[in-house]
Length: 177
Image (tube, rainbow, N blue to C red; front, side, top):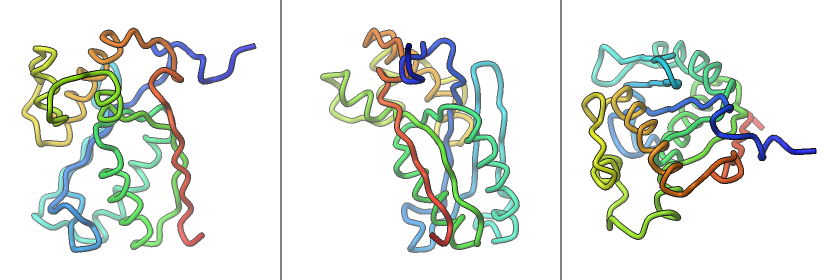
């Protein structure tokens, strides 16, 4: 009997996620300003703030919608530690409930599978595979789509076939716990 980790990648519900922020650290005033979740066929969630620094009520309205999207599949992102730090910080600050997701990080996959390049930035890794981004990078939608492209190149390059092969991990976080 196989476990969920033995599930073939091609049959898994994969969601590619990115967010853009106003600064590098949420504890020093950085705010989420764009969020995107895409699947294999389409953009499932796309939010962009109208303001340079979005108001709390605007972010508070978007985070539960984001979490609903993230909890229905395996999240794939590039440098997810950064993104999850913002999501959990903002959710806790705004008194929202926690999150329980499974995820895989293309940054970690690239580091484990590739000898080069020296940098592991999303654009550089796409160049390594001679893959052009579908949209401009450094937007949430552009980076989520680019992550999807990079992910499948890494899967092919590494001969990865199952969820275990991509090192799926779990993030559980409960607000106020």
